[in-house]
Picture (cartoon, helix red, strand yellow):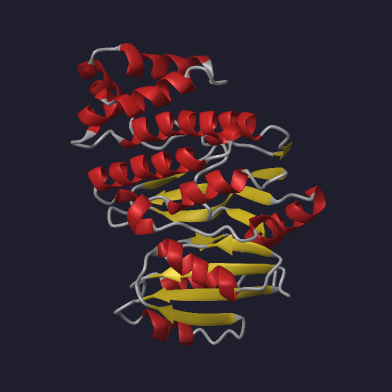
Length: 315
């Protein structure tokens, strides 16, 4: 059994997959397996993966089903003690897996999260708050209020090392249906986790581009996120329903910035319900003010507010 199973879904990634794989095969933690799931690519991706010539790499080719289902294929084919999920257009620092595995073992952590270095064509920035701590989860709702709704526990899986035993049978949802299968996976994962270790160092290099999944059609993205929260909250454990509504209020408001459908969402009863629940949770003064304006202000003010503060949920 390898210490870490690195799972890389890829669709038409011939321009970036070698860069990604080079960063993974160069890891200072050598005891890893690398599972590349070719999600129905029609370019030269498979040939590039095969040409790497590293015995730790295994390539699986499946019909195109989206990133979530491709990750599930990788999980089912893996045997490592921990999962690491890397996107095919990104890179990782050479000591990322070693540092995260050491933190997982020394802290008996179910999840280890490092920071992310966002790389844009015109510059770079550290994405997340600088946290260096281990958190024992005794109240899942309170943890989600403090860490998840505020994006301290980020919605990505690419910057996490996750214990296989903790994940169990949990798998990713449909990327094409929900847009952010990472967010849904993390929400569901919280109910299984005892301890999370945060590392402030940005060890994951996240290349941002206008063609990436994150920047696809804004209205489709918003519709997928609304469906995600609706479905999750309907079946969520009782101690997670309120925290999920708080998270929905934050994520949907930040995601509505460039959407033609923003006015309908902001005026709708479902979103107002999220806001009312969120205001009863343990949110800070600035977020409470932000949410209160979105609930009680005239619609035109609400639209201007989400445009002003639109972007990632940790702002």
